[in-house]
Image (cartoon, rainbow, N blue to C red; front, side, top):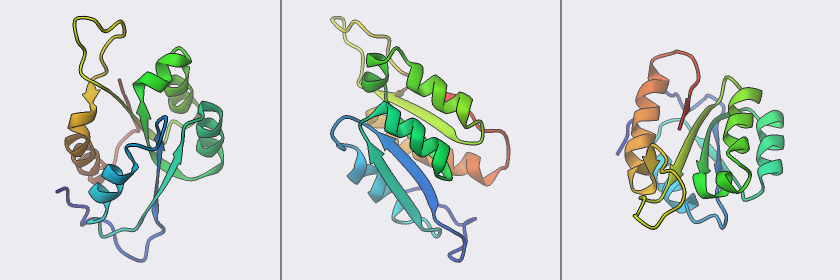
Length: 134
């Protein structure tokens, strides 16, 4: 489980956005963030337009994007999130590629979500520029 000891309870909640078709990743993200000392508010949407609006209107620190949904709009969602919110980190996830799959695999697989979140927390502890990991 990842540690977020650098967060203090009196700070405002960290706001994360999960963009996936049916909210199927929400419980995993919730369980990964439950142990953090700083409260976390998790938003979900399946609509790329809503994701962009939330990124513009809400103080999000991390977006977790289902690459299959992003492929439907030509990877423009990931690029737009990163471009419009340079201070927000964007992680894209996909299923493992198979010989019959047509799309390119993402750098992160859904099975790696716990490790990716832990990596993000460790990176968040050391201040630096936001990133898009594709």
